[in-house]
Image: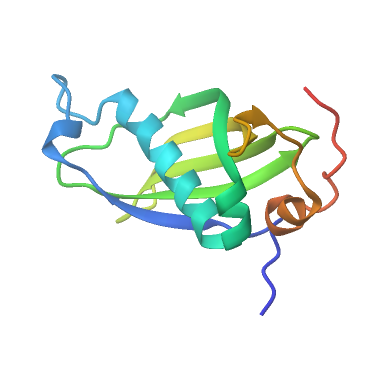
Length: 145
């Protein structure tokens, strides 16, 4: 079975820990950021080859998060992610955090990630196989933003 990266949505169920709750009684905004990173990392690990995982690590160059509704203690949430536009040196990643029970959107994020070559510790180009595995079809040559 072939997976089309332009429609694939990778999901990660998440349990809320007591330490995630802030003084207002809901999940702290910083926790959403952690979840965005956790689902992105899990998606990479599930789809990248062993060779790619041994050569590349990703770093964030930009996060944008819109908080829509609070998550509360006892909620079960799902982080859903997919890759958008790939440039020469970045991947755009979209993430939604939803409450599992009713699929209510709790937060939406857009993140730009840059591949780092583990051997040198320096940014590297997004190679063609990674583009093929992860990027939205038709956006492979999008200009740098």
